[in-house]
Image 1 (cartoon, rainbow, N blue to C red):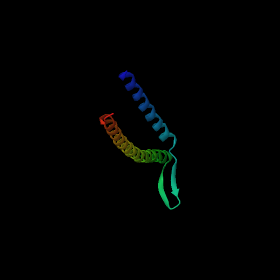
Image 2 (tube, rainbow, N blue to C red; image 1 turned 90 degrees about the horizontal axis):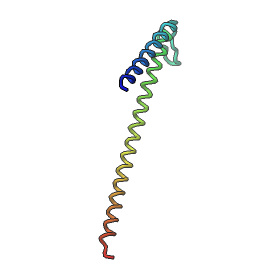
Image 3 (cartoon, rainbow, N blue to C red; image 1 turned 45 degrees about the vertical axis):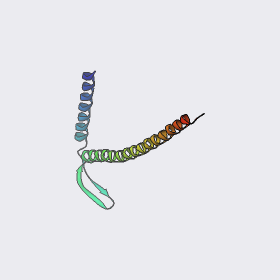
Image 4 (tube, rainbow, N blue to C red; image 1 turned 180 degrees about the horizontal axis):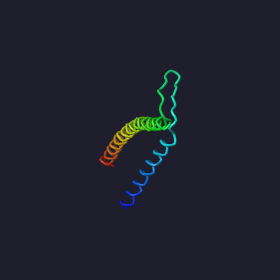
Length: 101
């Protein structure tokens, strides 16, 4: 099973590399990206596409990491609260059992 997984990962990596080469070869035109207040120097369309893709990946990781940390904090708080209530419930059960009936 590991061999099949390794082969599939290698094939996917090779396919991505091939697609990157094709993207670069087919998009050699030079363009300058002009944002309203800032103009970037001329570079190939492929370079701008790859740069925007990787910037999207970085932003996604940052947003996802912040969201994950917030969710982990909420989970920890909920677990602490549940533990507190479980202790209180156990205490109440023991008090009820210790009372003479």
